[in-house]
Amino acid sequence: MNDLTIRRATEADLPAIVAMLADDPLGATRESSDDLAPYLDAFARIDGDPHQHLVAAERAGRTVGTLQLTVVPGLSRKGSTRTIIEGVRIHADERGTGLGTELIEWAIERARALGADLVQLTSDATRTDAHRFYERLGFVPSHLGFKLQL
Image 1 (cartoon, rainbow, N blue to C red):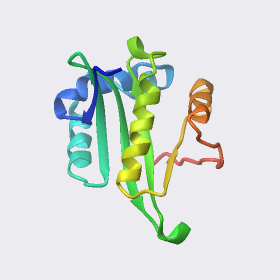
Image 2 (image 1 turned 120 degrees about the vertical axis):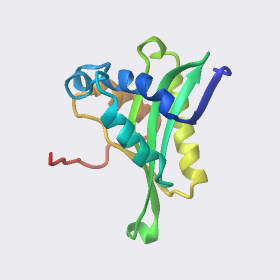
Image 3 (image 1 turned 120 degrees about the horizontal axis):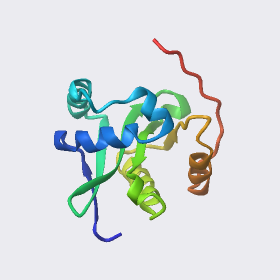
């Protein structure tokens, strides 16, 4: 994978990132590349926040993966800082190549460099393959998550 670059995402990456977000049964119901305006607004907010790290994995000039790393300072765990990994997506052509592992390992190392004591993520309950993937990387299914749509 020596031809892979993991870097801060730019606005130019948005069409590819949105396409990856939409490229699965769950994403197809909630994402759309027909109108990039809401994604451009979100990108501006993310890019302007020093606690947000939206990254793109690039190979041969193509955006082939993405994730967002959020740094959250906290009081619990004796004032620990945690990072949250969100929006992990790998282009369909790259699945099974080890790119996902490399991207998550990069995020863990970046979290350490940012002073985090803990990395956490959530995965939709229906994504059993993803659960096995994260457990293989050392993540423990220690909590039950809840959401409230607003």
